Each structure stands twice: as structure tokens, then as C-alpha cells.
Amino acid sequence: MFTGIVREVGTIDEVQRQPRGGSRITVGCSGVLPDLTEGASVNVSGVCSTVVQLLRHGFVADLSPETLARSTLGEARRGRRVNLEPSVRLDTPLGGHLVAGHVDGVGEVTLWRRDGTGILAEWTAPPEVARFLVDKGSVAVDGVSLTPYEVSGDRFRVSLIPETLRSTTLEGLAVGDRVNLEADLLAKYARKAMQPATQGVTWDLLGRAGFLD
Image (tube, rainbow, N blue to C red; front, side):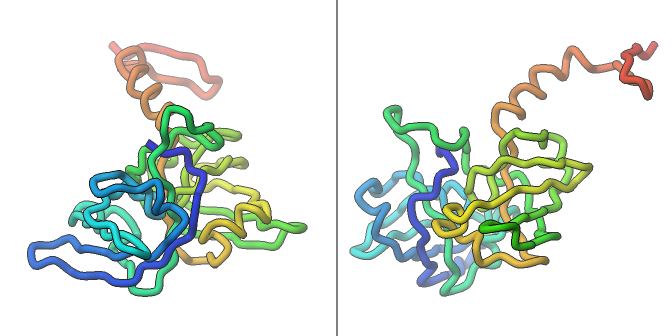
């Protein structure tokens, strides 16, 4: 489990494709190393990854074929910068929101505009993420905890402050870039819990509920 507060920006130093699918990546970093052990979890740009080997200046992690297919790490190349966060401890302040590191879908930047000292950004989200987006809720973008607003259909906007841009890889984004998205974990559980109560319910244009025969 993570909080979406990036601790360090690392760099992918090597990508080794595996014979039966998947890949092994070597990530160069220093700041998060004291909190890592072999077998520990680390969030790599939104993807919960297991450390299989600690190095003097980084770590090695294996990525499954499913991870490569569902996230932008399938496009990862040497030199790519990645957001890093070690798993949260019970005494860690929850500065962002609960992030599992399980990518729900890949979104795309549709707007990237200077707004004062920050950036006004807009992303599209696939249905598996869009259904959980609410104004002033939470969403993880490449592992970064953000607050969406002006949610409309499959699009949402975020105001990125200078500190967020400085301390994450988001600063290097541009229109058309793809990002890993994870919907709010609590919203997913709430929707799941409500499903039995809402099965067979229809809604009219005024938001009034009716029931199917």
C-alpha cells in the first residue's frame, strides 16, 4: 500500500526482456534505498513492484506480462524517469490517499497549459477509471496522488502546483503522452458494496429511481 506521495524520481538503467514474456528492469535511485529490502514493495510510476535484488545505486524488479500489457511500463526504455515510493508504514503520515499500485487503465494527456506558476492539465480516462472519478475526489496518475475537478465523461482536469512538478516526472509530460491511472480504492469498494442494492434499478432524467419487473 502507498500514499501517492513520490519520494524520489529514479531512472530505468536497463530493461531485459524475458523469454516467456515479462521483463526485468534495473532502476537507478538513492533516496528510497534505505527503505527497501529484497522482497519489499515499491511503487514505480503507479505500478506496485517487488524488489528482487538490491544494488549499490538502485534495485532490480520483475514485471509480469500482465503488468506490461496494462501499464505504460510495457513501453519503458533505458533512460526513462520514473516516480518512486516505498510502501507505507503504519506510522507514515497519509499525505495523499490510499494507493494500491494496481493500474486500472492508461490515460492520455489532452491539455497541458501554463497556469500561473503551475500547470493546468487534462487527461482522458478509460471506462474502468472514469466511472470512479468525482470532483474533489482522488486519482493516482503515474503513482502521484492528485485531486480531479471538472470531471466530464471520460475527462478530468488537475491543477499541478510547482512542488508536484518539481518532485515528480509529471513536469516532463506533453499532450498525447500516456500515463498510468489508478482509481480511488475507497470508491471502488463503495461501488462494489452498492451493487446488490442497485441491481434492477433504473433512473429517469430527474434522478428518480424506479425498478425493473
